[in-house]
Image (cartoon, rainbow, N blue to C red; front, side, top):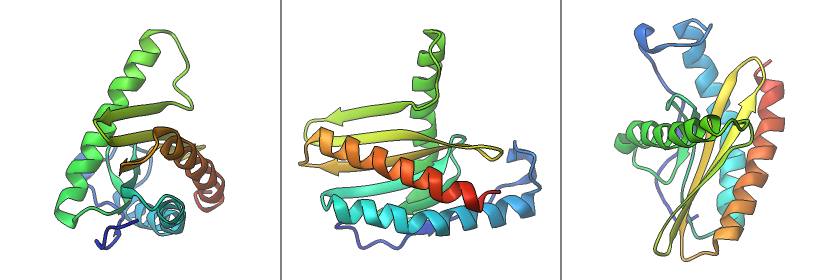
Length: 161
């Protein structure tokens, strides 16, 4: 991964923004913990695919957990945009009466590809792993992002209990 930007970990929310069963203090701690645990997996993805420019792991609601390759000031906006794109794809899939589990969204603009993959943690919620790269075969980015999503699911399932 070529970016030199520090990792952005965790997400703070106001009480009116919280939609889960967790208390705000618990969410702040949990989001940071999930981000810290996810960070090595995201970094490993960046090492396996050196052309990756941005990697993010956020909630399905658009709250950051861990983002690499993005300036701090842009993390919240990128997480919100990612969840919006993912939500639209999920709504389309549900409208077609298909299960939304395991959803993958592919976006391409010229030589730049973005892959968004769903990550579900039982008893915690739904998350999105996203990776963006340029000048790379789309299939390579897809396979490696899905691999990382599977690794994250296994690793975070034990932490989130």
